[in-house]
Length: 229
Image 1 (cartoon, rainbow, N blue to C red):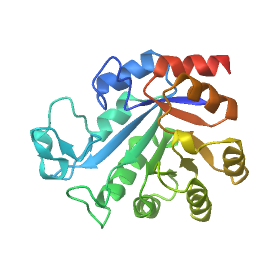
Image 2: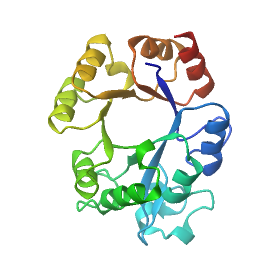
Image 3: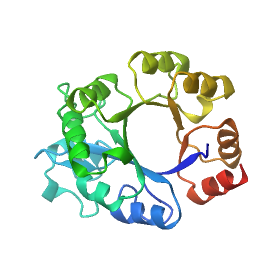
């Protein structure tokens, strides 16, 4: 198995993160896929933006699409741009975020949009929040989902939860990953996609451990590590 390389928010060394240009640049430079973030705007659109607040403008949840900066794409535009690539869509709806929606409308809408996009077979939906993943599952049971593990969380407890919930993947932080963890996840049928892997030594180590994917800001270095591995 070859470790897949996901450009974190696209290729941010040559473009603004989470933009169509960053995704196109990632493709041009040979990434297997991209990782991107989705939030729900005030008018119900799914926009690709990492932070809960747009700098100098306000919370994403309080802005309409037309009030967003022009470089912020819609999820549908991003998926179309990434056609043929693998896409890890992280749904953002943290309990501490402004505009947090406990009803998980953003998760349901994201699941529906992915299912209707024609790109579902190439998409993995991830989140730190179990209720978000549960809502995705409830809306579209056929979609693959992955549990993100916070860097201060217990990775083995998260692994047990992912197995119990029958998720398809687990996304631990790079410092949480070792050989036994990877072996245990694979034995349970879970893919292991590691974030955010940037240091050359970490890239080589993750490839050596046989993880399924690395999410990285250092695209060229990651691709080189995969070639060496």
